[in-house]
Image 1 (cartoon, helix red, strand yellow):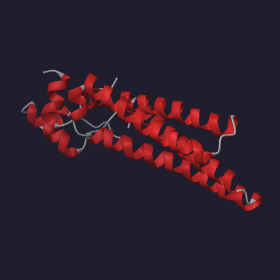
Image 2 (cartoon, chains in turn cyan, green):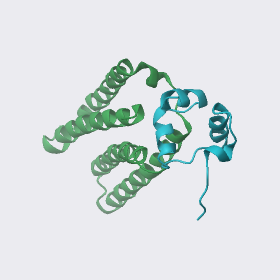
Image 3 (spheres, one colour):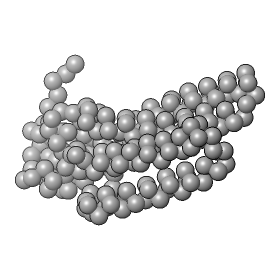
Length: 52
Length: 133
């Protein structure tokens, strides 16, 4: 799936998907769930948190 | 380059062009602000609309898409930053007016602050769109 297609599926721009991939932007919880839903996986399969 | 970044570049350059021309007329050539203000406002509006039309024609899909959540954060942060630039200019202008009672100087300082504040907003948008938000 292309970045543009994923962005369109979850309601953000391609550049925001790129920023999320490069860890330059932490998406909202809603967008996080939307991305996980697109791939039919759980939220923690897509996103992780390394802590402070 | 993201559409919002292109838009910020174009609007910033437009403002530099029109604002620079205005300041050259008023401060450089001594044209009264009342005569230079109308061409300044008209020039800024017409050039901004023309630039936005060109951008929209070049990228119709991106132009018609609503601002997304990251862009909204960038826009809010940039506006917050530019408000400090504008407020600083206004305070400087008021201070200058208190000392000199020169209304025209107050006008120049406030209008220049308005231009600088807007430029700061576009610059902050460009910076933040490329940074970690």
